[in-house]
Length: 296
Length: 283
Image (tube, chains in turn red, orange):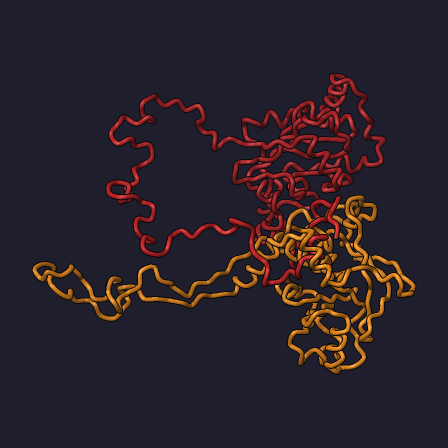
């Protein structure tokens, strides 16, 4: 049997043809697959267990972190300069590049015939948005703007100006919307949320420090005046030097202008509804105070 | 070294070559898959089966019969190379059979420590003045009939879960190994004309399928003749498709799949190899 000219998979399969039958009797793991046993056996197997001989080490008297056995500790030698104070509370927006968005479209992970929101993006399994890490949504960045070809109606939580231009140049539309943390939690894993029989939350209004961002038509904020947004679209097209495609003439016009209510989390579902996936039922609130709360 | 091994073995193993003189009309066909298995999760454009793949060709195998002990070739079918001719990861096969052995194993061995051995509460002799070593209990680990230091403290379960993809790759590697070694056969159906065990023994012997054979069908309701005939032969077994596992595949010399079972398992494995994330319930 000749193995010449064969590599990798084909070579391995060809070798198997000539080798004895693979069975329980002749299989073994790769070398060093199993970690070594922690404790040795025999005369000195249980002697010191790696703790050494005599003193602080043997008694495993681990000193507290930063303690330097009597020295003035390093962490106390200098004044406290809190550059990162409160960083763990700040809102994070992990980046989503236009390049990655194009990849999601090319590999059919995203359906461009429907509006794209956070749920659709996270559902691809490629984009991560983790509310436990204070991720308040995604930031659409302009990397790959020159290769972006998709025509989409996308909703992100933050976007840069070139990214907005790249989306609109192709005849798409973009909105930036504010999601609070519990809305993100529901949006990234709706199945888990529904299985707990919790009502769909109403999206909270933006905080004071970002209210201006989401009211600004230049950011395509969801609270901005639609009239001013269309003026800003035209202004951006002139700034970046492209001809703005008329979405009114587009066959997908209905899809492209679809927007959520500022309080709404999922297309087609209203806040306050309880979704039962098992029996395929939706429970809607009837009491006036509930209706008032979820619409207000 | 490899050349030496192969030359030596070639003398003992019959060469694996397609039967050119059998004179049958060869019917070329590929296994049909459910439409939904050919589709990706979101849109229907991506296909697992790509007949134009330049790097991996479909594996063509004979479709055989079971209704006579003599082998008849009923046609040729194509098997997907990602399932039946992928890299044979024998280490992953080993991981799978080790897992199958261990996850249901419980070590019941248990020894007593000093405090559990009966007696030994009294100090056997005073600390000083006896000229003997100091001891506080006759059941100390130093004593005969004393407790045991570092002994097994059972019952200890060895349960663990292999990652989902290692289990999928294990099956795929096992199929590829079996096909490469000519130990995997595809038959049209499992219908045999008689329920005589002698018929099955004769069939296995004549086709050189080795003593142990595993027959696989899609459903767990199998032809009565085959069930009755193999019932008394312990090394010839039948199994539904959903019971397929690496341990059983390797335990038997030959794996015999029906055409439908091959199609079913191929579709299942292709789905699991190509999906974006594993379903929640099989993580």
